[in-house]
Length: 120
Image (tube, rainbow, N blue to C red; front, side):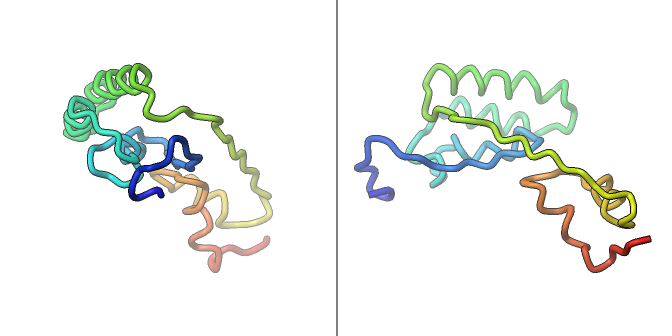
């Protein structure tokens, strides 16, 4: 039913991240997670935004993509989950590793070097 697009409505989880580029798979033409949605202008804007690391250069493209998605409503967001984290200062390595993360998606990378932590 999902692959042949015979459903009228579905409930899907779409993880994002701190960088808007991580969410581009939810609307890009031909991407399975986009569930058949396709807007060539949004795709072109996403490619343009990825052409720079400067937020000021990227922001207008992502703002325009947001306008397109808000007008066409291929998806409706039900909620945004905030996952607060707290670290015990007696554990050495945890907060230090957290601060080194260039990008955090679903709080997973912070646990990748758990074998190096110790309690002081």
